[in-house]
Image (cartoon, rainbow, N blue to C red):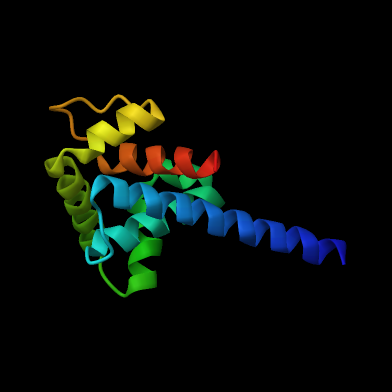
Length: 127
């Protein structure tokens, strides 16, 4: 019985973490119509499971996501970059990240894919 309770706690925590990231996406103007939206969610899930994958985006993380969505590694990278660009262009990314999460994304410094995935993972970890 104890194992089942621990399993339920892990599932509910993972669900809460994804909800927190979803809410953050909505605040910064990222919506599910972008492929990068789901790729970023998957990236956060993978990094939470295997933290060292944040240091091997193109060799570990992107291939896992590409396999999950039946696409290419290049497609994953491009769509994540596009999602970040979309949020950055709207101007809400800097405002929300700086105000509520203490991030230091400058007005002219768009985060890289790795920086943004690490940032999202940090948000999820404290959820």
